[in-house]
Length: 384
Image 1 (cartoon, one colour):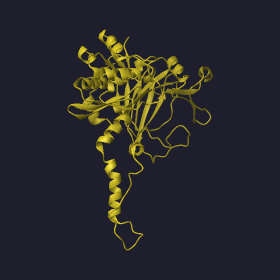
Image 2 (tube, rainbow, N blue to C red):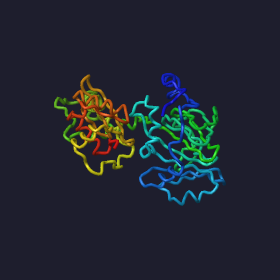
Image 3 (cartoon, rainbow, N blue to C red):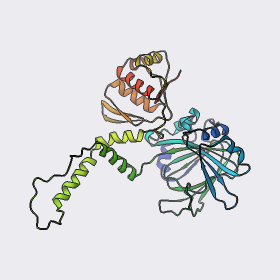
Image 4 (cartoon, one colour):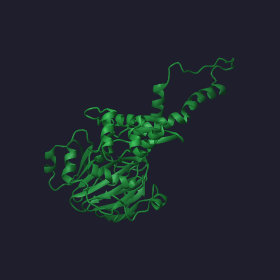
């Protein structure tokens, strides 16, 4: 799918993480990549993250039910206002995964998933704000989107176990989105979407932004796992001091250096972050091949003209170390690439969701070793 009436450079300069933008008539050709019944089917599956949100008529509140849902549940809703939301639909439906491609001007490591929602007329989840960027693509039906003030962790919210609803919401902008329209909402901007027709489908392409606390906490946890218990403070040049209760500055300096020297290891941090940011959204899901394949078998398949396809649930990125080496990250693991052919393969793998290898790459042992590993762990498959 391809965007029209959209200039990437202008958007990044004027809107990205700055202010919302409504993009009308944004697709060369738009058609819904998913039927409502198929979304409902996904919500009934084990292992998928889904929510059914109904609005009570008595007090205007929201009731949240977490999936998996029973098939009979949808027949019990009657004329209530309700919304069904399913996370990471792109992992299971290739046509939904294709919605991410026009936004690949944002780095791979920032992309989260595509959440799909279905709502009856009047359905919504209430005014709220998110801490991430999102492109809200309108599918079938119509939805009224309202934008309000910028919020933060100190903004007042209503008490609710599952939803972060704003206590006060003052509308500053409002639009009706038609099929194919896109609304970009930066982090922190309060917003409220209400279906103004039945059978309202919305596709939310969400992005990740790690918090400082997450980075520090996970980075430290990774370092602690590798540290030895005998790596301890020592002071062989200790001298007597007048007051034993004083922590002297030389001790503080040495202790601080013990911590900061380790924290300041940029090479180790880069490796850790590549693995951390490429870890799948649902790492416990097993996408591995039913039967392991050998490099020779895969070489035969690729030689016949078949392409490699990335698993939409997998994450791919790399960090260039030198002009002749890079670290490739796939699904939470790092793979050093120093051979020119392996480097070319890694760059193509991170840039495209479908790759046709030429004979030079197919005959490379380094490349085929990577292909075999990724195929057997389910990160790649072949277009058979």
